[in-house]
Amino acid sequence: MSFYFDNGATTIHKPKVVAEKVAEVLSADSYGNPSRGAHLYSLQAYQVVAEARESLKKLFRATDKYEVAFTNNATVALNEVLKGVIQPGDHVLTTSWEHNSVLRPLYQLEQAGATLDFVSSDPVTGRLNYLEFEEKLRPETKVVVCNHASNVTGNVLDLDWVKVFCRRYDLLLILDISQTAGVLPIDLSDEQIVAVCFTGHKSLYGPQGTGGVCVRKDVDIEPVLTGGDGMRSFSKTQPKELPTLLEAGTVNVPGIAGLGAAVDWGMENPASGQEELGRYFVEQLKEMPDITLYGDFAGARVNVFSLNIADADSALVSDLLWEDYEIATRPGYHCAPLMHEALGTAERGTVRFSFSRFTTREEVDQVLRALRELTERK
Image (cartoon, rainbow, N blue to C red; front, top):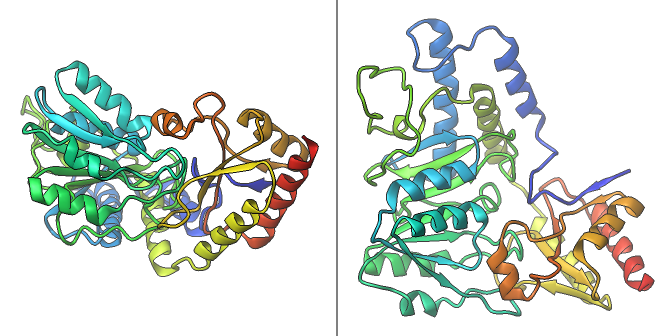
């Protein structure tokens, strides 16, 4: 029997309704190309996509000032928003928590004339040094982009603090919610966040190849991708209206249908007991010799845990966990290089354990048993 603890990369246990909905769209001979005709097949595809948009807006408590545009993951959504909003001469504040899906677009924008500053993290807890937002503010600062929760430590952003800061200085706040959508409440009702970029295949429990952005309609975005929209074929430019502005070409109708079903299922079946399970895991780990656990365990967090055993390389530990115990984990750098530099793990990375709402106490106990045995091998 194998044990899957790589849910921070993608969840593999999906609600049954997700596969059923994807299969329905693919096999019913009823779903055409949305917004590409007035016949029944096109309208039914349009309807299933529209229902998924509304489900996500409900999940995020988005007002009518927001719209959801679908992409095939959070990376594409972040590229579209960051490259569509940030112009040469703009200054961007971001953090050491960021994933490469934020960092690499920002580095490209820096080459094009934008400037960047990074808020650092505590080397022990990984907690952000929030006062640096004020210290690194410039007259030309335009955008703040933050990871809602670190995919290395599981630490959660003090979003209320950041929103107050952005409101005080009239800054655009963009949030990467890849690790928190479906786990923590996302509340856009105060309209302070201009865009949240999400992926469908993690804790929303949708199919891979789905994701998108919930974006405020008044934000000026230049389209990164242009192409067919099904309506204004003689226009030489991408239509400015959302979601068309960010949805060039045909969207993934089966995947979006599955994502909509997953979101509805999640809202109807709220998770319980996950915080307690995470606390139990941490308490047991802290009793083991030679285990270094990274993160802030006094504040809010998601169930993502990074550790190392003595001076062993993270890849070796992860391989042993799989080969000897059939426990699937993620070793290495988790596409978050600045976080590893802050924690002092740039040489060997960390072994990451990430839970889902389907993770059980029995599975966690199997992991703890394996880690105890590995610490004894040294």
